[in-house]
Amino acid sequence: MQYTLMHRNVSVIDLEIDEYSNITALGTLYSAEHLPIGTFHKNIVDRKMLNAWWTKRSIPASRQGLREALDTLNLSSSQELIRKCFGLSLSDQYWVSPTDTPLHWEEINFFENSFSEDIGNILFGKGGSAESTSLVSPDNTADGNLKKKWKISDGKRILIKSSSAPYHQETYNEVIASIIAGRLGISHVTYQMMTEHGEECCVCEDFITKETELVSAAQVMRSGKKRSNQSEYEFYIECCENLGVSDIREEMENMLVLDYLIANTDRHLNNFGLIRDARTLKWVGAAPIFDCGNSLWFNLQSSEIKPEDDSELKTPLWKKNPTYNLKLVTDLSRFDLSVLDGVEDEIRVLLETSQHIKEPRIGTLCSAVRTRIELLNEIAEEQTKCPIK
Image (cartoon, rainbow, N blue to C red; front, side, top):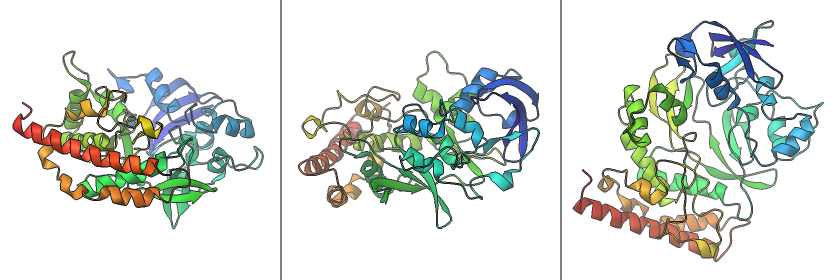
């Protein structure tokens, strides 16, 4: 099947895509500068990298309820869904147009046009059949392991996320992270609680617009070549600065501080990055912090929560845990931690609305957040005495 990869209205490259949404061949290249970052080297389009970027748009195999949803839709893999919605997403402006029946961006993009909730509802385990389901949905290209769905509410594109047993805590963690970030003045996505299909969920507005797009840190790091003696952290900062994002170190440090306070164990190269203007290809800056659900000891028993000890917490990013990552922050004194006074009381009020999180876990979590704040204050004071050189 023949398609043209599009970037909004810009034709990028002709593709051959098989029934399982794999890019099997490349055709005419129209605009190298609009290719996804990391797919063009030495004046050659890297089909393997382009296919990896394309298939990464599919729902991960680890998504809750995915197998049941695929059975309902009579599909063998989530990768097949990408082509069904022309690769359209609410995170960027890339898509594919069929060669024999060309489509127009203004008529089909999800930022300006309505879309079906059928796929999202099926992913939540709520009915539907292959015959009656519309497959043109941004849910086909939504990343992450937890159940989630896109919805239009009052004209806004909102993302609804569920949580996992036994504590169903991830949704509350997203709200708590946005509370803490808000008090600290850190750029972040604001989450609120809501109920969807009888489940406690969190919801946020799409922070990408019809003109912008999210470029993950993993993609950004494909824009350069790391020196052998350079850490990945410094390499990422260098890549961003080379792209013209001058305040990236401060933004990264903000993220590391927040991740320490909430004991985030799931910060990785695909859940932070940069915002780019898809029309001009100019870089806007760091994306607001999002996806903080796997934090606050979400999957540990209350007796296992040890806020003063990160030795059992593992992170996939930079160093081995949130405390070690904190060592990358050059000046902790710029964070006014007094603004977090009483935040544990605000967190308690929130958690007391949960159907699943009860005492004594609520008390343990509130106390743990307070302990993390006090520990960070001690670390900041020690850094002031012995500044990083």
